[in-house]
Length: 257
Ligand SMILES: Nc1ncnc2c1ncn2[C@@H]1O[C@H](COP(=O)(O)OP(=O)(O)OP(=O)(O)O)[C@@H](O)[C@H]1O
Ligand SMILES: [Mg+2]
Image (cartoon, rainbow, N blue to C red; front, top):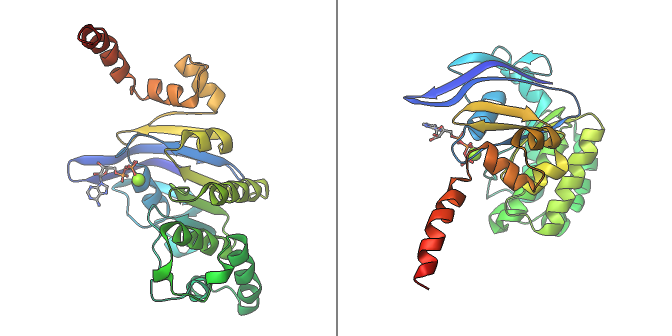
């Protein structure tokens, strides 16, 4: 459902995405992990047609994203890293607006919008202006809007940021049940516990390059660590240097205690 071949994006001297080659199947929940600035959001922008690649190609559900962006976008839903919503629309109006953009018929929208508002516990504020919503409420509204047009592939950029534990659980349950119905989910997250729990496979990206792809177990084997995913991730991304640093500095500083 998601295929890329040598996908590359340069901004001046910075290569944000460097020769990315991926193949993600129907119903997979794929976790895309990597340090800040590794190129995750840029990858999502390339895959959803918001940015043009410098080179390489991408297909969503067999549709070439660059050649047929409108057709590709119809198949996908995007939850960006910031909940972009129009403050002067009500929650219901925002959902109607998104429904109309996707040319969903009115009968479907009339049935589905109240269901989605209730599902995300926004039914009581559905007639209030979005400008009065908290960050988490906006995030939930965007999640609801993505479910409105029944996408086959969903891109999530840090979907749980700002959600309270109950809403985060709800979102996780929704993603799992959608994947079970054959929807493909591509998720960037820094919350390793979410990646471990939800994602069948994950890819680790660093400085634009996809370094590793595998199941949690495969990544554990590679890292030679049976510990928490955080340790595996840090050892694979070279983030454990600070520990070595601590090893040397601690005894020294302890001498002064
Ligand atoms: N529009 C842009 N113009 C110039 N450079 C950009 C632009 N967008 C991203 N970059 C650069 O590309 C690199 C990758 O950025 P990106 O936002 O994709 O990282 P990320 O993996 O999503 O990071 P984070 O975990 O912090 O969200 C960074 O070096 C960033 O500065
Ligand atoms: Mg990002």
